[in-house]
Image 1 (cartoon, each protein chain N blue to C red):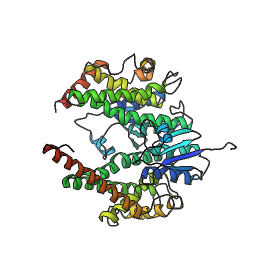
Image 2 (tube, helix red, strand yellow):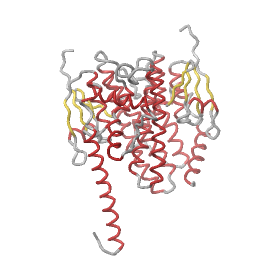
Image 3 (cartoon, chains in turn yellow, blue):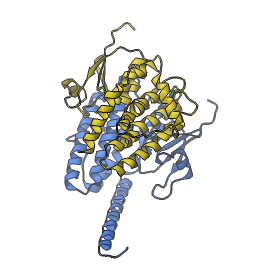
Image 4 (cartoon, chains in turn yellow, cyan):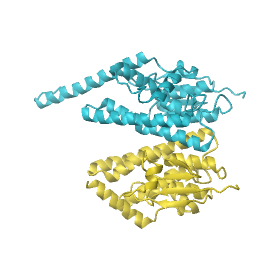
Length: 224
Length: 247
């Protein structure tokens, strides 16, 4: 490709949504400029590029803005066609998209709720609901190294950035073991596989700092 | 293609989400068997088997494989029958991203705000909610003008992804206008969307697929009565209980 590609990513170090974009760009070997945003003090650039939602991640490619992490992931896969990470078969794509939404809508909601609710009983209920939802992923992983089969794919990036490398850090900080080896052996195996992949490893928020951050956020919300 | 294609669609006549796959299948000239579910009664075996996680419609079953979530189904139809009919999603990645962004806006922000405003008993919440809905329509008006570039639809000359997404709610907006006199599709505020809405409803692929406005208005009215009855019953029960009687 002869033309100059200008790729800029606005993100936040602790956000699973911007981390997953970094994983995707690294998977494709696309060089990009990263701009770190601060939650409490959003830059004029972010507010100009995403006036409706005011959120990260924001991808800017050759002057064009793309918003919403799942939309950005599809855009990246369509624009840089080598190493495709969405399945090729339409049915499998539909499956991957369906489970990605399950992760980003339901698991996210019950998962964060299990940390944010002030009452313990409420947290327990949400924790159990989260386990039930993760069971759908457990079943999907049987006989596979990754959701994408032999290599990291769309759903691996989505679920990986949110569950093991974000929610689990929050649970760790609270001393909770939500996903056990006993009940989720496939999931545990999958996380170990993920941790060995270069571009995934490079895009995980540093553990200690992250656990501390999740703890701090959790406490703040619980006592609010 | 010599193989027999078995395409089944499970839906309910009043659901905007179930309209979407119907339009997509018509755009692609795909024959299908439609099954009307009774969500107020008992869900069919087929539904429970195909969508055990959410137990919701619509569900597309293609050669015995279930596909869930209305917009997911539309994308699947577009990809599976890609040599037939117009492209439902635009071809350029940035335009596709734009279509996905706005459809997520409609489904995750705009329509939930309308639903919440419609259901709430608080006058204050209702007013605030409706303002958000109106604001959303102004943003969609702007998006439509910029994306359609003078053509009749978001998708250009033919109906596309965003048209299907937002279009599936036009019936409800018009029904609410009949029922409540609430004019969200206001020509003075969103003139291009108003024109687009009429064009959408009269398109061949949509005409026989969307339920009649009167029927929808009647249904919404019934839903409201039902919700009121349930709320009255609950109030009555708690009154009896507090008086020491068991209901």
